[in-house]
Length: 64
Image (cartoon, rainbow, N blue to C red; front, side, top):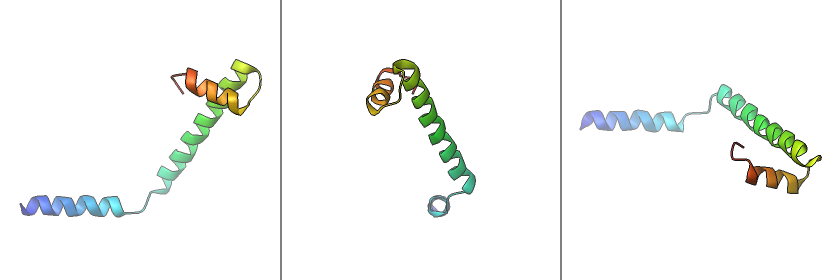
């Protein structure tokens, strides 16, 4: 029972710790990649980038 309490304390401490800066960099890079891929697909599908085009691409392209 003591081992379970110790493991739960370790996990709680880990979850409360600060975010690694490389995790933030990875998040920023992935969000930029998603936005660029959506914009490129919107441009190739409709010839321009618009909110309606982005919505249509997001709705019809399962990969995005």
